[in-house]
Image: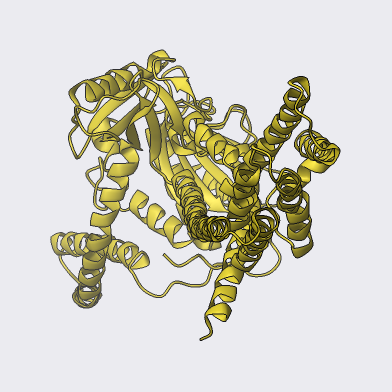
Length: 617
């Protein structure tokens, strides 16, 4: 390939890099501005944001919007203004000392100083000091800076031939800046013009002296070297700055991804410093730190509320010792009125042990998880395996059970002694009990799931509650033990009507069994919760459930009654999960009359058309 063609292509690539660098800088500035408006663990609507220490990083990125070429150009423009003032001062000093200066030299110095200072100070002309991206802008920038320098310094050099003061050294400045800001072809063209000027001036002033011509030639060679080195250094600077900004952009995207992931985490995340100030908190952590709703957004002190005393002590101990159990430890938050919440606390340190950091810098990440949620997840994993085994056993029991029932029915067809009839009745009663147990197990056995359908929860719950009250012989009205508060308008949910009736009846049976029986001792409530959830609640005034019983509430074959199968709440939970709902027991404070609450969160869907399918796990 022709060397000139190679030089031209490399120069074009460098120009493209600089133009791309400018565009990426603009995009980066806009992204940084967007990031500054949003906090790390919360939306921009939250006052103060949740991440002050990351805001400082965003401010640093925004302040880095100037490219290296922009700073170089502005320094060059300022240097031109200083040189212009110096030239005027030189002419003034020469006139004051009685040294006669050509009028043209004085005019050139004044004109150059006026142009350089105007370009430096006037806002309208200051745009010429920015890195040029378009061809017309680059030409205008060359003419207003480098071109003016070459013309002015060349005139001064030509007009001062034979004078002891040498202006030729000033020609290094436009050559250097041409190598930095322009393509290699333009830089070499500018250097060639300056070299020819030096040779012409030497020939005009020194005649045919080989020494003078040789000095001018060596000066021109030095200018070419300066232009080439400046061009190479500028190209390397451009590539490194472009790579750095690409890395910053990737880091910003990764930070946004991390923010989104942490926001959606079910576990709470707190970022604390050495002074135990919370610098960032995701929504899950803010919900765990208070009895209801969300705690104030970060930053806040970890000793702000008395309920956080145990958490504050645990975090202080972890930061002081620099170590924490890998599996975590349990801390209890006491919110008053007997309401407590047990959290599993895990600590991850952001600095190695022994490394000194400022008290305001992030030192550790506190991972919080509700112990009840953790235990429920462990139980669910165990029960999933148990359910598959139970379903297989129940399927195998059906055939022998049917044979026993048939044989016992044949025995009852013949006349039997009273004692034998009593024994046969006992057999029939236990066969029916086993059949109900097998049917319950097979009801929640893994297998084909019918597609969800949209139903009116308000109508279905009202009808099921009325039928249940008649079956239990409860009177209607204020004297009844059952009190209800149902949403008057239709509420579309994704559930099977028969399965919803079974869940509701099971919860009402348990509530009435343990309630006092006084008017209003059982309370049924159905209310919408936003656009996506309908809340079904059953409350009772029975004694609070013991912690050891609460841990096994939804386990199969766990019952406090001697003749209970222990499958009622287990079946309720399995039916809820099958339809994308969830069931939970919530102990309320001791000051409340109805202390036991079971809640079912149903998926809200439009009543018209089929219900949307559940997402795949």
